[in-house]
Image 1: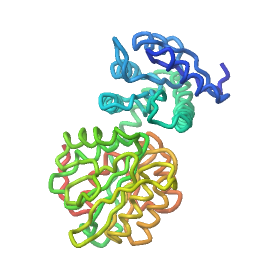
Image 2 (image 1 turned 30 degrees about the horizontal axis):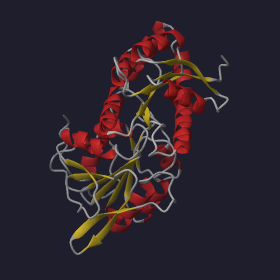
Image 3 (image 1 turned 90 degrees about the horizontal axis):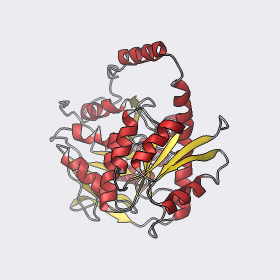
Length: 369
């Protein structure tokens, strides 16, 4: 195989779906499907034999399901896994668990009449190209000696402790009145490392945009709520913002805010085909800045593309502050990089440091768990 070709193994119990995914991928000359398996067990054996750069994995299969197969491959330090999920409650729940187990991302199953096949193909190809190039690099790295690997691991362990925090750009903590978090690829896991670590007394509201298909944001909110001391909910039109409550924008709706006599409330709108992603970080962050001004605290996390740059510009123009995830802990250093290159990020920190810094910036006692 050409060293520049990205090799993919497709694992799905449906012969139709295996062919459909193969056709989508092989329209790109640099992608080749090197194997197709009809079960989790067969897929694991095929991955061991063929050493692909990327795997697509059906979530729901008889016998060993996608969650178990993904877990087995991740435990063996296999290639990146992109889950292929049905737009059902069970599919969403299992997909979120697979991401927690180590799958890198997911796409909606392309046989559904409820989704845009052209967009799914574009998204699938984009993700395979991104993770495939990383997969080829990692595959080459496996050829290094055990001594070199031990040296790298030891060096990584020595630098794993977070650096001491830099002084605040503000003269006083606690001046912020709303947190605006934007994320995409890698976001569900990133959010699970942030929201559950915030204390019950977190003093200001949080608004979150996570790029996801319809049907996924509510299970995500419920999983985060179950593990968090703060409340985490999917947004509803007219819902009031409240301290210590994180509102996740529902998929398929733009989330904006409006201040009225009863306080600040959520406004959900249909997108007038102006955004690549719905909800968009740009629309949400711009609205947070318009309502909260210099009290806006933006957080940009892992994700492909540059959604968030326009919205964070508004936060900065209103006198707000922007926190960015670093490259080392980002699944995809796209959105944080775009914001940093645009000069919008005041402070860059590893993912595990974000909760502590949010508490620091809001004058809240941080008690890591």
